[in-house]
Structures are given as structure tokens and as C-alpha cells.
Image (cartoon, rainbow, N blue to C red; front, side):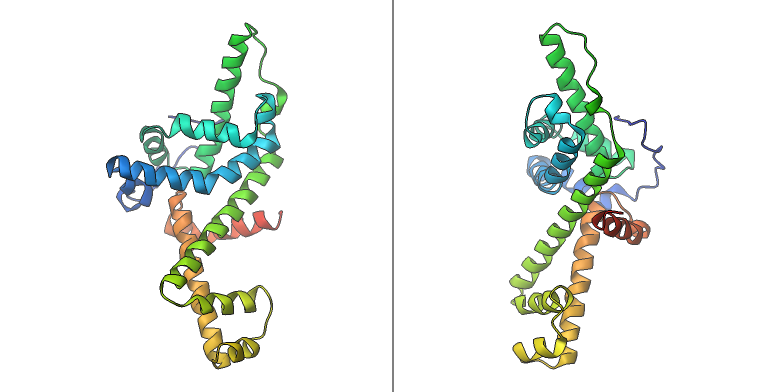
Length: 235
């Protein structure tokens, strides 16, 4: 099992893995593995690439960040054992992947060193830094929120309720008064407010689902969301 010196010892307080989306998909054979891999690559490519660039992993290996991350995914996600090990670890998936990317980069560096018959140690740029980890967390928060918004908008569209997203976005993001939005959609102000509230609840539910796929359990979700907001604010 993969470990990291700066990662706390797992508490083994993970919920029943059968309740986790990833764990369920991994029991479904090749079709399930493809679904899981698609989720992982979609959700974590950008955060890992940002981290890779910030810490200098790709520069050290003379490749592009996305290239290194794609190579990491191809190396680790070829079968289900890598993610099954993550489930047993009890740590967040994004941290498991970040640690795994570091290990993969070191493997690549050692391989290149052997090809050159050199014994040089990896450059200092390959050591972890607090700044790179902060950038990683911010990129992860952005990715998770983008995904939650996309899921919420798609669900509303399937139900023929796309106007509710416009009300939510118009009020909470653009600052448009409910009275103005109500007139635009032939609603009362109270109805417009209720529509926006319903969308906000759906968005929170979508975000909670994404956080659960990352390994959070119910009692940790509020703290996870607060941490995401702090990361977005650069704190």
C-alpha cells in the first residue's frame, strides 16, 4: 500500500465500502472500471496538473504536466487494484492520487537516470512544498464545484426546469433582485426565491456526492465544504 511521510495514519473509520459509488462500480467488471476511470480522470486531471506544474515534477522530467498526469493514470488505473488499495487506506482520493503522482514521477526519474547510467538524486523541485499543495487544493475545489454545477444544470435540463438555474445564478451570482427575476419568468418574488433555494439544495447535494466519491463521510461534509471555500479564497 502506498504511504506518504506527511500523511496521517489512516483511522480505518471509513463507512461500509459497499455504500461508496467507486466501490460499487469496481464490482461491475470492465464496464465499472471504465466508469470509475472516467470519473477519476475527469475530476482530478486539472488539480494534479496544477500541482505537477507548481512543484516542478514535469519540468524535472522534461515533459508537460498533462503528459505526466496522463502517464500516471495509464500506469495506475490499468486494473482495479490501485483504487481498491485506496478504499482500504481510508484517506481522501485526491491525496492518494497526489501522493501516487509523486511516486510515479520519482519512478520515471529513476528510470531516466538508469538510461543515462547516472546516479544523480532527483532535483529539489521534486520535493513537496506547502505552496504547491495549496494550489492543488484550490484547483480541486474549483474542479469539484464545476462538476457539481454541471450535474445540477444537467439534472434541471432533463426535467425541463433550466429556468430555475437562471434564477439561482441571476440572484446569487449576478445579484439580480428576486422581484426582477420574478417578472422575467412570470413568477412571484416568493416563488422565485423558492426556486433559487431548491437549486441551492440540489447543488449542495451534488457537491456532497462528489465529496463522498473523494472519500468523505457524512459527518465530515460540512468541514470539507468549509475547507474548499477557504481554498478558493486563498486562505
